[in-house]
Image (cartoon, rainbow, N blue to C red; front, side, top):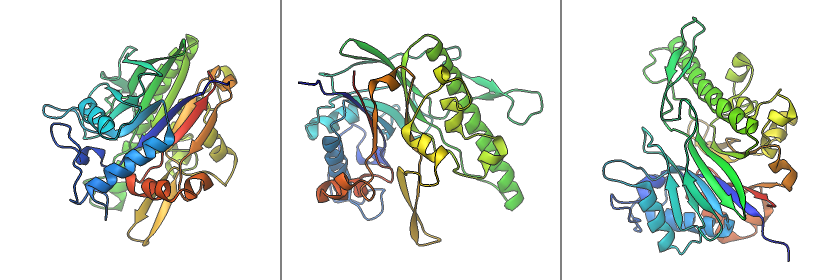
Length: 335
């Protein structure tokens, strides 16, 4: 019998933090969730239905419950897993975010060994210097959501995982369109600098011959907006190493499709009140190092409107739409 492959997932769960009290207890009630038109109890149940259906060995949760002086992301996630009897019953998190959006990893301890293992100089809780405005003076860069670096073991295989949530802030405080444009460009430069910092870490792991997985929400992607033309590449392409020799590149099936075709997949669905309709984007990725590409990886976006296997199961379809504005991305790797 062929052993079941390793399945890793990345999922941005919108407003997950708002579904727990300060003790990490799930708020299973009829009070409104932060998601429009959905109760907290219904959103919690929907998240559990999706996680049960995915059968992932490990889930990189973007916008996980907060960690601060009162709240603890690991405690909340493990209580959630016990409440819904999920095999992914253990959690680990890393450096605290400056926002209510942690990056945490929920995993099956019967399948994986996992520990937080930050690397590099500087580490992601430190400061990276990069010349943002081309004035010859590097500015200090600190990520508001430090990437989560994990050492993971699976059937004797050692993997490195880096969970990512890169975000370009909106042009708050702009007094006119010109100022808004300037602030937006500055914010996107900072986002690109964070991706360059991440690329430095990727290069270190590839040079060491590590099996590497970079996964999360980049709020960016090939052909996503006008700033890509301004800067030459998207942040996703920078992290993947597009243009580098094959042995120094990461690969993501959906990013590759977006680079090569107008018919690109999407992983997130947002309501636009000005247009009174939804719009979609490819924001979530799972990137693999070259050696892992030899292991027959298979990617999937659990998009209920685009994936027939999701659409054909009404309970799962409805849960995916209720749980978050992002849909999970998974990859199966035959290790």
